[in-house]
Length: 325
Image 1 (tube, rainbow, N blue to C red):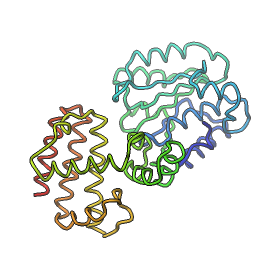
Image 2: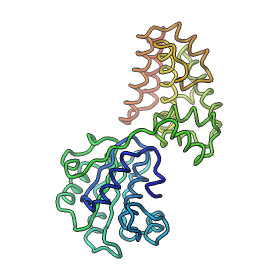
Image 3: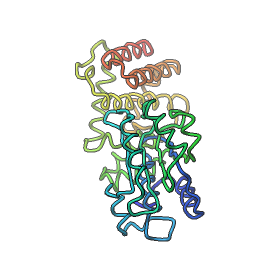
């Protein structure tokens, strides 16, 4: 992966190329923005360009260092990944990183440490990393990626040059989903609209009969809202699956709100159910719709706080019925 293959991040890539062209590489960079918009890919592309045999401000993709960095098999590259299911980055991982940094570069001028999802560093790990950032080894570069700088210690942020990444334009996401994920046009169009500019969110739908699956979920959801019946399976979802469904529930009321406020239909996420959405809007007030969106948002926040998911789902449906009826 080189800079010219990073899609939808023109400003961020331009700034990073400028750093290389002017030979003003800082000790640490912080890439901020949604998950799944290219921060990690760009971090690796920067590491390649920094150590590439080419004199250009981009990686050639063919030399030994480029090929091995791509495979995470380069002695002067250290990648930190959080555990599964949003697991924290603990202090032992930072200690291993500090030990690695204590050795001289094996074959390149620069040693690059990429810390993905740095907002998941524990307090102890953050403090340990801060000490290293305050006195970084010579020719060592740290690249941190995070959803939001506000989720990191302010003292860590102050030690980094921040590069902001933007949500992917739906058209860019559509092209990637079709070319790289092999999605059908109608599926990619729906998923790119639903994902809000994040390919990580879009990837949740990979391998599914997408429109069929999303309509099945919406039908179950509408039945649960309009009755007191909730299928047992709806009460026992994994965190990943519940997050995917909350996105769908939110898209339903978001579409109703758009048609209610503007009558505009071209921007609907669920375009295949336009008539139902317009009809649903006629029976709901703006307050009803906003109340429903708030109920879904509360369930999402409970889930992110690792609350009991069954209770969160039950409370959400109870709140939705109050908003609707």
